[in-house]
Length: 181
Length: 116
Image (tube, rainbow over all chains, first blue to last red; front, side, top):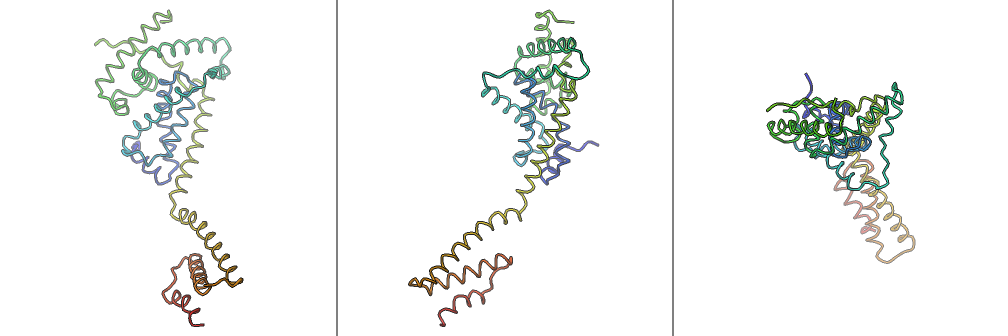
């Protein structure tokens, strides 16, 4: 049976690095999804989720409810991502070009994929932040409504409704871009 | 409520570029394990004592040096200074041994000079 967040948090507090690894495996993708929802940039999301996770481990004693570690962690990610946006260098270059050398894909395939990503990012940018988080956590990360509700501290019905509106709006925006497939 | 079909968000999946994702995870894991180790070190009571013991011993050594110099150059009021020096020495050696000075040792350190 999967060890609970609360148990893992207590183990980390006792200096157990393996427990920290398990939490990392469990939450890193979700951290990135939330960071992406806030920053809209994959490169920034990578930086933010890494820094936020390390910071969470350093401050693990501040997690008052270890059973709700996930929600606490995602709040750290959100705050870090917002800070990054506030202090972002105006000369920032979009590091998403790093994807261009991904293995096993031709330059044409890579261009097509980057074009798709760009359209998705633009479409997501048309949603409210909470909707972006929910749609990414549900449709990209595969989290269930109830899991999202717990971690985002929202009623499950609200999550369901936000997801509905987010999907509908995404389809509208993508439709207007003429990319609906 | 008629649920709209989900949009395919897989192009945004971080593991579409496994190499990049593996690197990110490895780098994060490294920083996390260092953070856990650092936390453990900071929480270790012995480490806390060690951190405090060094400056205290350094201060005690400086006081001893000053008192020694004062004794050599015959500064007035040296009887009390000499007592203080012996007390400081006794305290320092007790800290090094990890013991508390006994009442008898303290009395002896203070009495010696007055008996002269």
